[in-house]
Amino acid sequence: MENANKRSDHSMKWYHYIAAFFAGVFLTNALPHFMNGISGNPFPTPFADPPGKGLSSPLINILWALFNLIAGYLLLRYSKATTKNRLSVFFFFIGLAVISLLSSITFVDKVQ
Image (cartoon, rainbow, N blue to C red; front, side, top):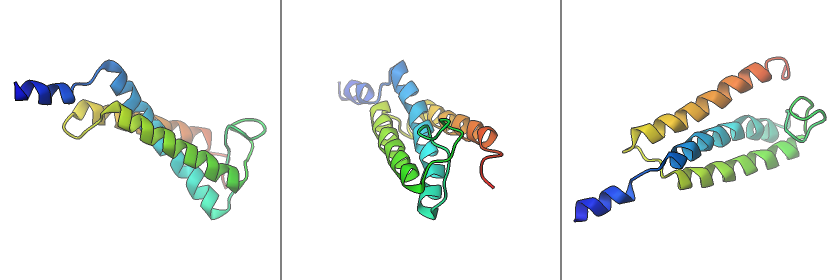
């Protein structure tokens, strides 16, 4: 009976894997905004003109990074991702990889 309870604590539904994916996306997306913000460099955000292409101030980048960190943390908690569930870690990593690759393509000419 005790094993059944332990197993149910770690059971994951399909939406937990989606949450793990987006946790990877949000937590990874926080990094360039935070680094540019604390370095005093402008960097594109969704609030720039045009969105995602123009440059936002370092303060806006810090605020956007903090939002991404909070959203990523909450999604990671909700996802129930653990190292015991390798598939959840895989989905987290895929989210990290997707946003990293998309960002490298999108911002190749933006930051000099």
